Image (cartoon, rainbow, N blue to C red; front, side, top):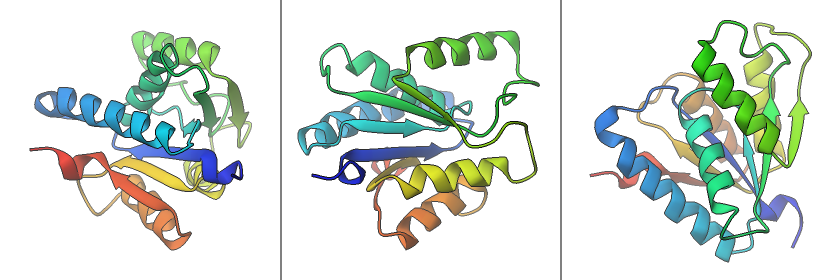
Length: 161
């Protein structure tokens, strides 16, 4: 099995409604465990707030039970958190410290740094696990790009009640 076949990327919205959070968390965990059973051990997350953070923390938590799981943070720039709240920066740094690998696709924030990061995540993956509830914005673009590149798409939002 190639490394790409063993790799999944995450993409999703920054806002997850409070009423959906538990369901998103449960579906995400079930999905990662199922993919792990199919040989997917590398998980790429973009380090953004919202779904990216939830996905990264889920991989880190599941690593206790599934020790071959690996979290790869693919970050758009070294100053990604420059306008974030202190509590969000703390959570981000905690994830970054525990990640198995950290990749920066750029040095500083630019107009297209998120786009470059998202394409990098897709390029090295065979599966895209997403939380997509609308057909516009960065998540919709990334999921469309992943589909165009032949990735299997698992939309956590599709399975919510």
